[in-house]
Image 1: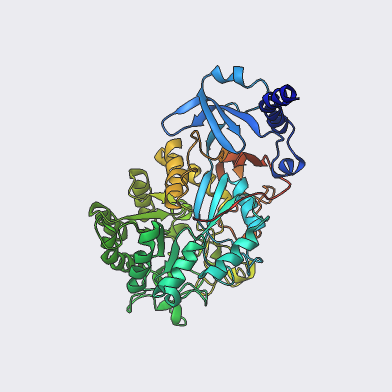
Image 2 (image 1 turned 90 degrees about the horizontal axis):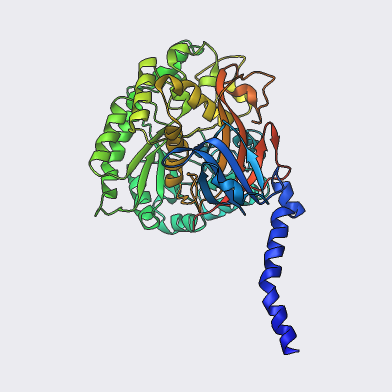
Length: 504
């Protein structure tokens, strides 16, 4: 009897291995629904895999959602006999994009976008992780309770991973307990506006609020993101005065938000970011300036703060790199955003700063609305809702316009994956490396396409995007999130299995 038990116990490890092998080769039905492939252990092969240090021809081994090997050459093939091999040939295999600045408007304004359509579009654009802004959902995410509403709304409705910024507003800025509860509930950091946001329950902050926010964030080592525009008394009055300019002319709108607004805000911010220096009272906190449009004096202030040891970073967006004020047609309110798209020379300076490393990363600032709010019939730039709808197109836009400046694959990875992962505190994302989540996108940089009515667009309201009508290069072929193939050649996985990301 005892010998029989011993023999049985000795067989247990073998039986366990067989069970694991079975589930690798014949996965459960719910796993199949999360992915367009049936295997949990497989290889992704390509002649152009972008790793942190090189472009290699070889394969990435994926098992149970993680990268377990990155092999150069053909040495991996002997180990892959029992597992599926997905060979993408000459296509580029890169880390999935991480967009740290998107407005998905869920819950409360799902007629604007919503988690399902927004994350479908993200997957089709090679984005594997989104960090959702605390507005324009309703209510805004400014408390532990409102964060729980948002995470509940995301459950089972996201095709990519989604994290959440909390809001810093006057209501909670001096309430340390409330901010801690919001951060303890899982907010990856905080976001504030230094000008009116356009959302009633998200009022603007000043440097005193921001200083308090940084003090709390220092203990969590999480960032504060800031919309950096401060209205100047003598400027920006055209929007308030009838007949002060042709409201259909983009130049009229541009005058209402001059670059001096950005400069004034950043000049104010750098008086508090000195507290983030080593040994300072807010050491451990970090300030991140979102969607920089002014490549002149505003950027210079940021560079000086970095050189002084301030913990500060800055992003810009593809629309500031693709378009210039001189090109925007009268009445085409698809191009309205804040800060506004500036002149062509400024665009050239943004590109130079981006490729020199003075601008740290890119984000979409995907900010849609219902078409009615864009006032297409009137074409009134002063009254139309601002925001560029872009989520699905950010990689081909960056690549198409960046080729003129010889942008490299590694620069794309740095700007869209590595540095955004660091800002959001996602240590297991942003690089094709052993131990990381298998968040991978595959694309063909040589393929060109027209963004017309025949092109599949998964955004809720494609017509409001300023990119419709463009000819772009860089077709996204496949997107993997935690090993699940969630998008391939116009098809999404049947079930939304993205993970809500909460800080711990």
